[in-house]
Length: 285
Picture 1 (cartoon, rainbow, N blue to C red):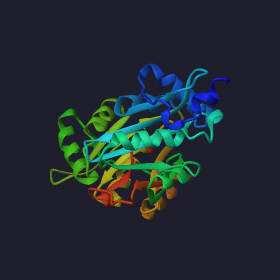
Picture 2 (cartoon, rainbow, N blue to C red):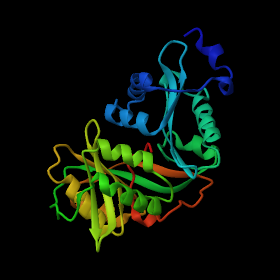
Picture 3 (tube, rainbow, N blue to C red):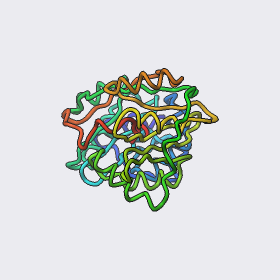
């Protein structure tokens, strides 16, 4: 630790580097250090779909890390902003956030904030757009069977539907998710897509997301079809601007857990048709 003081005397000068798959274990160690859990499935996914950056600690491992997920040039999401507990209050969080904002360029940048991180993000120009509650529980409802699996031949149509609703290009993320998810389902009416959703396994939960649909009934049907028979508790992240979905999830055994804050630089309007975006893939992206 003798090197730590001069190393961090000027946080602005601390080098930030692009991480590789070889750094994944160090990222998980950092997450455990902050009591976030290892979540190996999520980190594997993040290294496939996002850019992961970090700061090397002089005493070994990582002093900090974050992810940046790009959606074309229009939009980008910052996630997994972690600073080792032993370097708290040294300016590393600000250093990494400034690095992220610099490389994001002109993209609209968003993130989900913990209460610990929110004051820093506010100082950097992020404004609160909504609040998210992670709903977790054993699904107790019935599956209506309105959806079917997305095939390779459906993917372009689903991607076009998502681009219209989300307002940016998530091709890379959704293509990887389609190949690796536990399930990926679509609902159609009159030959047109009216919603789709995926389920992927994290360490302790079957995570339902994204959920993109024309209305609450379609979103609920997708979540129900994906949740029925799940061998683990289900998790769905739901914004407070979706009160009906929060009520539906709670009524079906997926109760409210911890909160996070959805923030956007400058409080800018979210692109696309936010009314159709019922749940994210994960707060990290």
